[in-house]
Amino acid sequence: MTADRNVVSRLTAGYVIALTLIALLSGGVHLLLDNVITEQRDAATIINIAGRQRMLSQRIALLGTDLRQGDETARQPLLDAITLMRRSQDALVQGNDLGISNPLSARARAHYFDGPAPLDINVRTFLGEAERFAINRDELAYQRFHTAARTTLLPALDQAVSIFEAEANGRTRWLQQAQQVVLAILLTTLLAEAVFIFRPMVTRIRLYAGRLFDLATRDGLTGLPNRRYLMDNGEAALIQARRDGTDLSCLLVDLDHFKAINDKHGHATGDAVLVRFSELVQATLRQGDLIGRTGGEEFAILLPGAGEAGALLVAEKLRAMLEADRREGVPAFTASIGATTLCPDDRGLADLMSRADAALYVAKGLGRNRVRFEAARPPEPRGAVSVA
Image (cartoon, rainbow, N blue to C red; front, side, top):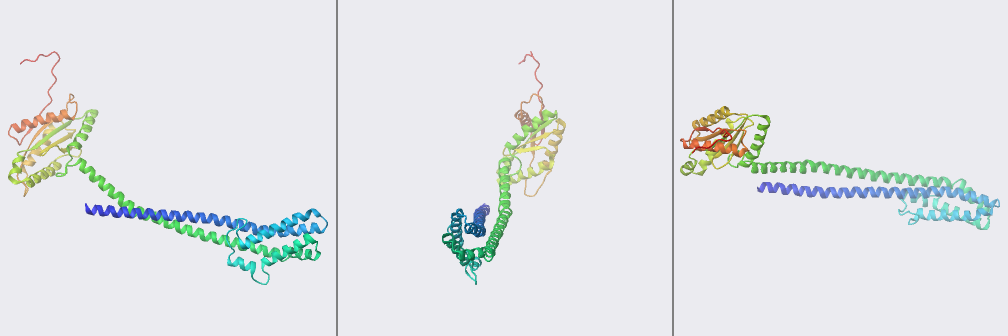
């Protein structure tokens, strides 16, 4: 019992640990997925704004040309485009605006701020020249920002977009790989839990269920079915016999002078007699026959398909086997047996067993160690008068 408790405690502890690990891993997968979604959203925002910088640089150049050619309606759109491009530039390099929260990576920062022609300075110079032209109609400023838009600025902005795209793809791949690792660990944990926890737990539960069933249906000493099991299955056998139109016989067995054996040899020897009887009776009965211990030294046997002749044959074989048996440590013992067969008037198993009990009573009265058969009495004809 202590060993069982220890096993149950270990299984329970392992189950709790496995559930905790699964919960943590599930939380980790959720966080990774959330991080992937966030990264994808941030990356899409950054790439969109960086790509818009390219479009704005060309729009500013076109609006500047329209204004230079005398179209005053292009002035305000030009100033709006300059303002938007400047704000976008600030968001890209500083963050905390336009939905951008992540700072620049080392590679992107080098592209924007390092080298002989850093992109941030070029963009701000371009915007300054475009704004000077929009306000003052400075022809030299127009030439400078218009030339930059057509030559040096556009390739640099294209390269910035490429950097952001590559970094976004790299972060996404890393998060996907991490997610796959966590998922693999989760599946491995589930498999280990199934093999090392659930499988032993189910085996233990099946074992304990079997033990409980045996305790509920088996006699603890002889291992034979108990009275409850016999009665439940006996009723089913009786119903089946009536449905099929077959015979069903009942034997009631009582070990002779069992109290005297206990008094003379002790209860341990009496228990050995009962165990020996169980071994012998199981060797005698056919597959499908039912037996149960109904009392201290009393047993009931149901023989499906056996009529009077078959019941007497089995009963006499068992009686003779018991009488002839000699086993070291077990005193000689015999049994009295009452037998009967199912008849149409029997209302249930109780009637059948009651008639077998009457036959057993007669067998014991005739000197024990014998078999007695009790047939059903034929019904009295209607109108018959009983004569005292």
